[in-house]
Length: 218
Image (tube, rainbow, N blue to C red):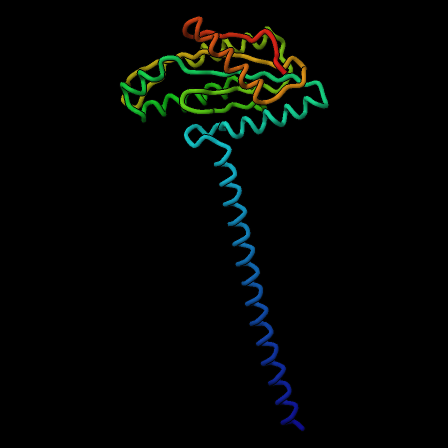
Protein backbone atom coordinates (compact mmCIF):
# COMPACT_ATOMS: atom_id res chain seq x y z
CA UNK A 1 0.00 0.00 0.00
CA UNK A 2 2.80 2.36 0.94
CA UNK A 3 4.61 1.43 -2.24
CA UNK A 4 1.49 2.16 -4.31
CA UNK A 5 1.03 5.54 -2.59
CA UNK A 6 4.66 6.40 -3.24
CA UNK A 7 4.28 5.45 -6.89
CA UNK A 8 1.16 7.62 -7.15
CA UNK A 9 2.93 10.55 -5.50
CA UNK A 10 5.90 10.15 -7.85
CA UNK A 11 3.53 10.06 -10.82
CA UNK A 12 1.71 13.17 -9.61
CA UNK A 13 5.00 14.98 -9.04
CA UNK A 14 6.22 14.02 -12.52
CA UNK A 15 2.91 15.08 -14.02
CA UNK A 16 3.02 18.43 -12.23
CA UNK A 17 6.59 18.92 -13.41
CA UNK A 18 5.55 18.13 -16.98
CA UNK A 19 2.53 20.45 -16.79
CA UNK A 20 4.70 23.25 -15.34
CA UNK A 21 7.27 22.80 -18.11
CA UNK A 22 4.58 22.75 -20.78
CA UNK A 23 2.91 25.80 -19.26
CA UNK A 24 6.23 27.63 -19.33
CA UNK A 25 6.72 26.65 -22.97
CA UNK A 26 3.26 27.91 -23.87
CA UNK A 27 3.85 31.13 -21.95
CA UNK A 28 7.12 31.65 -23.82
CA UNK A 29 5.38 30.93 -27.12
CA UNK A 30 2.70 33.50 -26.29
CA UNK A 31 5.34 36.07 -25.37
CA UNK A 32 7.24 35.35 -28.60
CA UNK A 33 4.03 35.68 -30.59
CA UNK A 34 3.16 38.96 -28.88
CA UNK A 35 6.67 40.22 -29.61
CA UNK A 36 6.31 39.34 -33.29
CA UNK A 37 2.89 41.04 -33.44
CA UNK A 38 4.36 44.18 -31.88
CA UNK A 39 7.28 44.10 -34.34
CA UNK A 40 4.86 43.71 -37.23
CA UNK A 41 2.67 46.58 -36.00
CA UNK A 42 5.72 48.79 -35.49
CA UNK A 43 6.99 47.97 -38.98
CA UNK A 44 3.57 48.65 -40.47
CA UNK A 45 3.39 51.98 -38.65
CA UNK A 46 6.89 52.88 -39.85
CA UNK A 47 6.07 51.98 -43.45
CA UNK A 48 2.86 54.02 -43.29
CA UNK A 49 4.76 57.00 -41.87
CA UNK A 50 7.41 56.76 -44.58
CA UNK A 51 4.76 56.55 -47.30
CA UNK A 52 3.26 59.86 -46.11
CA UNK A 53 6.40 61.86 -45.29
CA UNK A 54 9.37 63.31 -47.13
CA UNK A 55 12.48 61.42 -46.05
CA UNK A 56 14.75 64.48 -46.30
CA UNK A 57 12.78 67.02 -44.26
CA UNK A 58 10.30 64.76 -42.38
CA UNK A 59 7.53 67.04 -43.62
CA UNK A 60 4.33 65.66 -45.08
CA UNK A 61 4.74 64.62 -48.70
CA UNK A 62 2.43 65.14 -51.71
CA UNK A 63 0.43 62.00 -50.89
CA UNK A 64 -0.20 63.17 -47.31
CA UNK A 65 -1.09 66.68 -48.49
CA UNK A 66 -3.61 65.44 -51.03
CA UNK A 67 -5.09 63.01 -48.50
CA UNK A 68 -5.65 65.82 -46.00
CA UNK A 69 -6.90 68.25 -48.63
CA UNK A 70 -9.35 65.61 -49.90
CA UNK A 71 -10.60 65.08 -46.33
CA UNK A 72 -11.24 68.80 -45.99
CA UNK A 73 -12.91 68.93 -49.41
CA UNK A 74 -15.28 66.16 -48.33
CA UNK A 75 -15.98 68.06 -45.12
CA UNK A 76 -16.79 71.18 -47.13
CA UNK A 77 -19.74 69.32 -48.69
CA UNK A 78 -21.45 69.25 -45.27
CA UNK A 79 -20.09 72.25 -43.40
CA UNK A 80 -18.79 75.72 -44.03
CA UNK A 81 -15.04 75.57 -43.52
CA UNK A 82 -12.21 77.89 -44.45
CA UNK A 83 -9.09 76.45 -46.08
CA UNK A 84 -6.07 78.20 -47.56
CA UNK A 85 -3.30 76.69 -49.67
CA UNK A 86 0.04 78.50 -49.76
CA UNK A 87 2.16 77.15 -52.63
CA UNK A 88 5.85 78.07 -52.23
CA UNK A 89 8.73 77.73 -54.66
CA UNK A 90 12.27 78.70 -53.67
CA UNK A 91 14.06 81.43 -55.61
CA UNK A 92 17.81 81.04 -56.32
CA UNK A 93 17.95 77.49 -54.97
CA UNK A 94 19.40 75.91 -58.13
CA UNK A 95 22.63 78.00 -58.09
CA UNK A 96 23.22 76.95 -54.46
CA UNK A 97 22.69 73.31 -55.36
CA UNK A 98 24.94 73.60 -58.43
CA UNK A 99 27.74 75.63 -56.81
CA UNK A 100 27.94 73.94 -53.42
CA UNK A 101 26.62 70.44 -54.14
CA UNK A 102 23.56 68.39 -53.27
CA UNK A 103 24.61 67.99 -49.62
CA UNK A 104 24.48 71.75 -49.16
CA UNK A 105 21.25 71.90 -51.12
CA UNK A 106 19.73 69.33 -48.77
CA UNK A 107 20.82 71.42 -45.78
CA UNK A 108 19.05 74.44 -47.27
CA UNK A 109 15.86 72.42 -47.84
CA UNK A 110 15.88 71.11 -44.26
CA UNK A 111 16.45 74.63 -42.92
CA UNK A 112 13.58 76.01 -44.99
CA UNK A 113 11.34 73.20 -43.74
CA UNK A 114 12.18 74.08 -40.12
CA UNK A 115 11.54 77.77 -40.72
CA UNK A 116 8.18 77.15 -42.35
CA UNK A 117 7.09 74.89 -39.52
CA UNK A 118 8.13 77.43 -36.89
CA UNK A 119 6.02 80.18 -38.49
CA UNK A 120 2.67 78.35 -38.66
CA UNK A 121 0.31 76.93 -36.06
CA UNK A 122 0.82 73.43 -34.73
CA UNK A 123 -2.30 72.08 -36.42
CA UNK A 124 -1.50 73.54 -39.85
CA UNK A 125 0.18 71.23 -42.35
CA UNK A 126 3.53 71.90 -44.01
CA UNK A 127 4.47 69.64 -46.91
CA UNK A 128 7.35 69.28 -49.31
CA UNK A 129 5.85 68.15 -52.58
CA UNK A 130 8.99 67.85 -54.67
CA UNK A 131 12.31 69.53 -55.39
CA UNK A 132 12.23 73.01 -53.89
CA UNK A 133 8.44 73.26 -53.73
CA UNK A 134 6.51 73.41 -50.46
CA UNK A 135 2.86 73.80 -49.51
CA UNK A 136 1.39 75.19 -46.30
CA UNK A 137 -2.19 74.10 -45.66
CA UNK A 138 -4.06 76.40 -43.28
CA UNK A 139 -7.12 74.72 -41.82
CA UNK A 140 -8.73 77.42 -39.68
CA UNK A 141 -10.35 80.80 -40.49
CA UNK A 142 -7.91 83.68 -40.93
CA UNK A 143 -8.59 87.35 -41.42
CA UNK A 144 -7.03 88.46 -44.72
CA UNK A 145 -4.71 90.84 -42.88
CA UNK A 146 -3.42 87.98 -40.72
CA UNK A 147 -2.91 85.82 -43.81
CA UNK A 148 -1.03 88.63 -45.51
CA UNK A 149 1.22 89.10 -42.48
CA UNK A 150 1.90 85.35 -42.33
CA UNK A 151 3.07 85.38 -45.95
CA UNK A 152 5.36 88.33 -45.23
CA UNK A 153 6.85 86.45 -42.24
CA UNK A 154 7.42 83.37 -44.38
CA UNK A 155 9.20 85.45 -47.04
CA UNK A 156 11.35 87.16 -44.42
CA UNK A 157 12.19 83.93 -42.59
CA UNK A 158 13.25 82.06 -45.71
CA UNK A 159 15.47 84.96 -46.86
CA UNK A 160 17.54 84.80 -43.69
CA UNK A 161 21.18 83.68 -44.29
CA UNK A 162 21.99 79.97 -44.00
CA UNK A 163 25.43 78.77 -42.93
CA UNK A 164 26.64 75.68 -44.78
CA UNK A 165 28.92 73.05 -43.27
CA UNK A 166 31.77 74.68 -45.21
CA UNK A 167 30.99 77.89 -43.27
CA UNK A 168 29.86 79.52 -46.50
CA UNK A 169 26.83 81.77 -46.10
CA UNK A 170 24.04 81.48 -48.67
CA UNK A 171 20.62 83.01 -49.11
CA UNK A 172 17.55 82.12 -51.08
CA UNK A 173 14.08 83.56 -51.28
CA UNK A 174 10.72 82.23 -52.33
CA UNK A 175 7.58 83.05 -54.26
CA UNK A 176 4.16 82.27 -52.78
CA UNK A 177 0.84 81.63 -54.47
CA UNK A 178 -2.24 81.66 -52.25
CA UNK A 179 -5.68 80.20 -52.90
CA UNK A 180 -8.65 79.75 -50.57
CA UNK A 181 -12.08 78.19 -50.73
CA UNK A 182 -13.81 81.17 -49.07
CA UNK A 183 -16.23 78.96 -47.12
CA UNK A 184 -17.37 77.28 -50.33
CA UNK A 185 -17.43 73.61 -51.27
CA UNK A 186 -14.28 72.72 -53.19
CA UNK A 187 -12.34 69.91 -54.82
CA UNK A 188 -8.83 69.15 -53.64
CA UNK A 189 -7.22 69.11 -57.07
CA UNK A 190 -8.90 72.39 -58.08
CA UNK A 191 -7.76 74.31 -55.02
CA UNK A 192 -4.20 72.99 -55.34
CA UNK A 193 -4.17 73.87 -59.04
CA UNK A 194 -5.45 77.37 -58.30
CA UNK A 195 -2.65 77.87 -55.76
CA UNK A 196 -0.15 76.64 -58.35
CA UNK A 197 -1.50 79.15 -60.89
CA UNK A 198 -1.29 81.85 -58.25
CA UNK A 199 2.35 80.91 -57.68
CA UNK A 200 2.97 81.35 -61.42
CA UNK A 201 1.54 84.87 -61.15
CA UNK A 202 3.76 85.61 -58.15
CA UNK A 203 6.87 84.53 -60.06
CA UNK A 204 5.87 86.80 -62.95
CA UNK A 205 6.10 89.73 -60.54
CA UNK A 206 9.74 88.93 -59.74
CA UNK A 207 11.46 87.28 -56.79
CA UNK A 208 10.13 87.12 -53.22
CA UNK A 209 6.58 87.99 -54.22
CA UNK A 210 3.13 86.83 -53.09
CA UNK A 211 0.04 86.55 -55.24
CA UNK A 212 -3.43 86.03 -53.76
CA UNK A 213 -6.06 84.36 -55.92
CA UNK A 214 -9.09 86.64 -55.82
CA UNK A 215 -11.70 84.06 -56.75
CA UNK A 216 -12.42 80.41 -56.14
CA UNK A 217 -13.15 77.74 -58.74
CA UNK A 218 -15.23 74.96 -57.24
